[in-house]
Length: 256
Image (cartoon, rainbow, N blue to C red):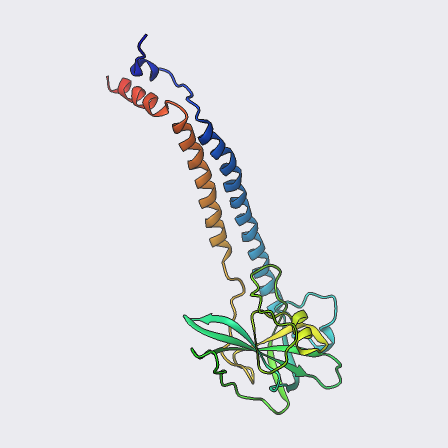
């Protein structure tokens, strides 16, 4: 008995391939999950941007506010004290405009306060010779600093530098948070760092993106994952049926 391909194309039929079906069953949920994950990330970034706009418009935080339960993320602040240039942290692997560099952290001692605040003075270029430390001006006198309060956001990549306690200053580190700075400096610190404004005394090259990836880009990534899921289903249908021959047959009937 002979089989007629033309006759087989008269009617749509499944020709299942177990390996292809298994692959699709595994990959389709993953692609859809990645799409929803990107949508969640987009919503998170929108919330961060909204928080930034709202808190930047608020009145400057006072030193008495820093230990309150109020959310002070991105709030402007004006603080007066003395910077400790003898103990300086250099946050490694900070790249700007294709140039490697560091972000420079020092402690600000505030009169009548038992706690100090971690100050991010900004970015400075690094030498290609790792033995050479960057040149940073010391601010010896009492100074009034202007900037924004910032607590490191959850998540993100942390470069493990293996440093538990600093024995020699300045110290090059792979990541910085207030909690870690308390360990490295062995000091009690306020729960926010102060990121200096560009026109503040002691400021280096400042300016930090509020979010690394904009919400619109996350949404675009989500669309890509969803499209890939749809394409996978279509390819699976084509690979496990006579759909191509069936469509050609239908097209041929229309031209007759």
